[in-house]
Length: 103
Image (cartoon, rainbow, N blue to C red):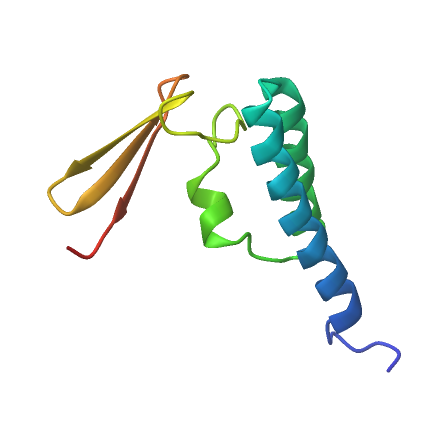
């Protein structure tokens, strides 16, 4: 429909698949020791989500740093702690992420 504000589901699916693939590539890049490449993948995935007005997957949001865009790997570039019903993830850059968990 011309002039319609309806989202194109095909475009949405392609964008979602690409975001998931970029998250996988970022994880693999960090495991290989290439954090800069992982940052590029994270930034690109966020940009795709912005342009298509999509929400990033919860796992992606919780495994990336908002400040430095690195993919977080506990023990390698992040520290994960449990405090008063919350998970606190601290990146090497000093950024903290907090989210609740069910005990």
